[in-house]
Length: 177
View 1 (cartoon, rainbow, N blue to C red):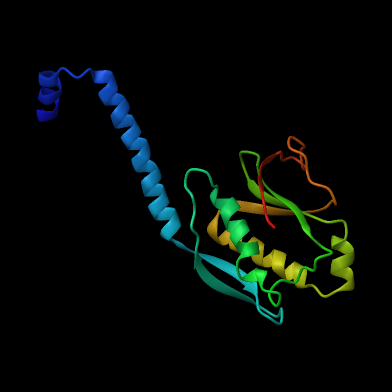
View 2 (cartoon, rainbow, N blue to C red; view 1 turned 30 degrees about the horizontal axis):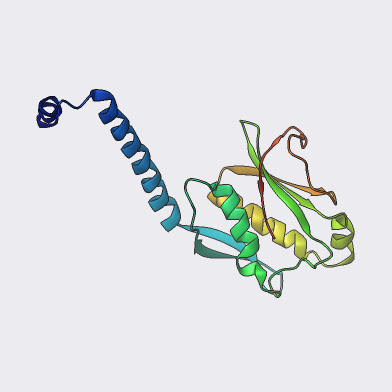
């Protein structure tokens, strides 16, 4: 009641006040989202050094709530986290991840990982450490997100935007170095 009286006494038009309240509400939404998403710890699954079993590791993800998608940040942190050390990363330089896409058909969410041309040959010739790595990524995504499918491709070139992968059209790329 006091606010309404103050607005009437000072002859402030209603529309600018409504716009300010709307902007403050949007800012509060992003602040609350930032506080809840950035401070939480998520479970990451990595193979142990001997690739015998999976071990879980809780880690916090720091997320820009305006520009970043949660699934994108989770996959980036999975590949760029502890796996950047050579002992934990089973992928050699000749087998590179070309690009990673988040896909969503409205019913199910998925991640498409596009490797270089040598994925099948690499898995057959060497040990199954890449399989352990992908299995850890799948376990991490299923534990923390609504992603149900991880699709592995073996194309040397990047997936162009707008091209369907199976029944999915890639929604946005996930850059991983």
